[in-house]
Length: 118
Image 1 (tube, rainbow, N blue to C red):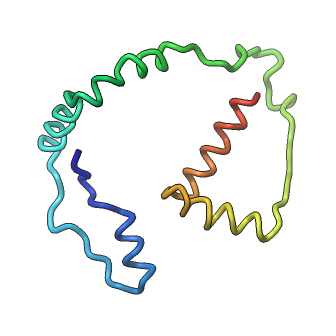
Image 2 (tube, one colour):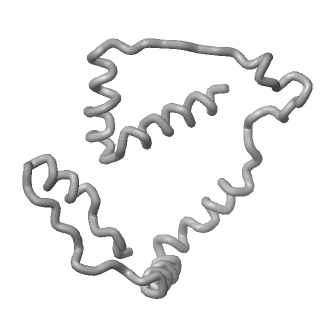
């Protein structure tokens, strides 16, 4: 499927190399984007995955039910941690680069893993 914003990773690479950032000359209209999305949804590879995604959507959340009398700000815990320079550098530079992701994506993955282990 066409990427309506171009390839942002190429823009970042241009910036890091000190090159001027060249943006696409035009964007994609909503109508064109919707048409491309509908076409992509009919692709055989996407259709093959439909049952798997329906199963994921039908799976109930694993978190325990909320108990309003217990789950309050007053009963919340607190955790504080500090990372050394090398670990911080890895989290902010190496890991996002290895996964072609942003720092926020990596933090979100870490949060999801923490919630999953709960």
